[in-house]
Image 1: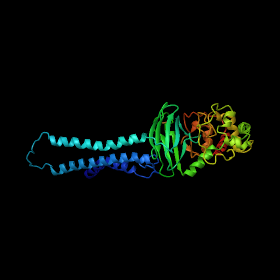
Image 2 (image 1 turned 120 degrees about the horizontal axis):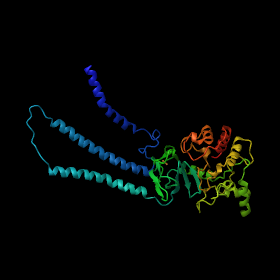
Image 3 (image 1 turned 90 degrees about the vertical axis):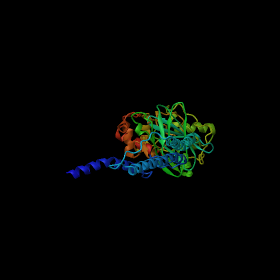
Image 4 (image 1 turned 60 degrees about the vertical axis):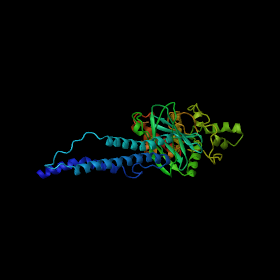
Length: 411
Ligand code: CUA
């Protein structure tokens, strides 16, 4: 019995130590296992931040080993034994006190200098051939604008690996914080103020980000992803976003915009359509009065002048699920909050849906973008994300599936 009690006491004393060891061990792992770990830097700026962190850790470790080592050595070496005489009584030691004040001050300086330098460097937005991205926080999703290319997207950002990216960030409502630990670090978003971050991704990859400032009931589901790709893949991505989208079906408003362009330019009707920079359908349906040219002087990516067919079901198609979905999308007023063209500069309440069909997640990371989840979201978004701005549009499940089929065509 006595042995058992002693064993239990020993075990309960060791338990905190075991927990600490487990906690430290769990900090390891790969970047795939811990996509939002700051300990797996994958860009120049996050490596710099990691460098500051590791500098601090090594100094702290050195102090820990020296101090604890001296303590243990003193305990063992000067342990009192029965019959020992009373040791010499001393009070104060000026030399010792100067030394143990100076050494910590020196160590703090060794940590402070690289820390302060790194803080200032994260604010030094590099000039030159950087890819500019405007990041706009919304409750609860992310808007990403590429002013140099005149396109906009949401929740999933693509950047070319190896190229400098500068983020200019703000919010349209409450405070948010952009946190992309493996690529860019973290920064708060304010209204009426542009905060910046910059990074250059080492290589291709898919990275996880998250809002890191409590911003309401769905703060947890304000996620985003960043795909770093090859420059060729990035060019193809931008060219794809610049392609016009038509809701097809009976609405088929694209020809109106094309006609207007044709009259002006005397060019072919399809050419007029390809040059169109604004969401013609949104304007035609009176949903986006703010249509206009985005990013004056925007550089057109290679191949932009080529005539590309509009994405989505063919105009007049009202038999296929996608065609029916397109009709519902237009008739149920979805266009009041969502732009379909990535080139639309209208300030919309909801995320741009130009490439919703190829995004990995929906609802700012609330669920995987499967046909089933997408239809479920369209039928009642509150079922998946309580408090979301998007209303329940009162669609039947067949209608929701048709709208999902239409959105799936937008890649
Ligand atoms: Cu946005 Cu938390």
